Image (cartoon, rainbow, N blue to C red; front, side, top):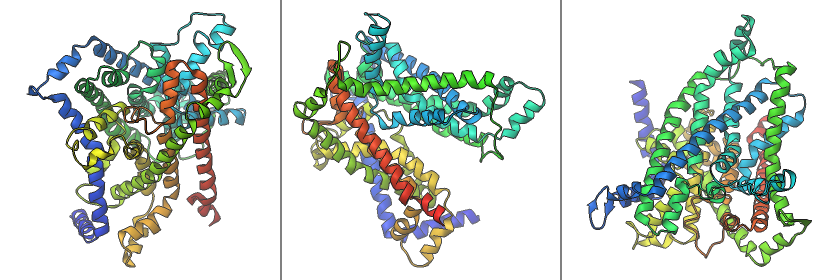
Length: 570
């Protein structure tokens, strides 16, 4: 009864606040128009034909295509294998960092670098490296092993590249879970005579299983939604994302592409719902709070030595693959002439409009990132601190973009804003402009910032804001002067994450970009497909420098101006 009265009081306060009501209405309009509407248009396109009305014939036609049936089988095979491999390698790295006494700080630093590299680099960098190291003109295959006909294209090429790209995500997720396991549970089993392996199998692993399942599903979703890696290293091995792209750009079959996109969306949505509302909740319930005391680290050399060697070798291999990219831009002809040259960098800016590509990418990402960070914090604030009927809708739709593959979203925007309900209206003017690219960047980065903001806001006592309300401040002033400064670290982190995700995005924007705008990732993809690896590596190297610089700048800003610094000073 008391809870109902409190909720009713919150709603009355909300309705008496015009700024908050206006914000909620605009937010619902934005989420509906730019997330739900494009997806709804895809459904309409795939179920409604001009000749037959409502029909399943489009799906029947698509399912009858041998290349589509092959693509869906390929996608699921790759997704499951990448999910399993990434979760296992991520668990190995997390276990070594949390449980094993590392003899040098070097390995700890190496792990941190490996966990950050996929965040700050374009999604297809490892595909380029794989071709340059293990392809027909690869340094390892051709020059070290004297193998002249090795092919890295196809199933195993995609699996290896995606696993190396996505396992750091699993590592970061599982590291947090392992830190929260109470050491006393494992030590009690050890005191009763159980071996380390038995303790791991009977105590640690059962506690971790929901988290491992969660990591598997996150990676599975990322893998089946990935467009860039299969496009570059897939060869004739089709996946759903590349098949949808080719269906709309090669076959000009918009209805067929829409039906394929709906099938891919259904797969990712089911996996996302299981991951978000079942496994994530279970892993949170299983491991609550922090460990009660410090863990006694494993020092036995028979355990530490093989594990650290294995992890160190894997981490070094990943770093070598990333380092390979700048060298690819500095060699005269990869695989044949290894004299150093700067001609590829010069050609980027003289022949291939590099300045325009970097300017367009930088400006659009710079516009999108503060809007994304602010929107994320507003949504987080409404979800955590306010009670109103549309709260569940705002949270669910803002998170939905995480489950929508970029290719699917791109087709939804094409169908929604070059035709659809707004084909002849004001919003048709968005299609082909920089504004629609900015909107896509915002939508794609919104879930990450929102999750970070929700976590930060749940740690802030409600009474801090209520005292500001009692002194007569309206909701806008409270949010800007009290709430936002308290979650400054999350805001800055969301700002840079949005910038990095935007400037390295490709799958959602490759279908929407027009000749008016040159984007770096599209250029890299184009030259990599042509086999012009020197130019592709030059573009990719400059992009990595930009993104890595943005992350370092954020860390510097947070160090001197963040919330944590103020707390230390106090």
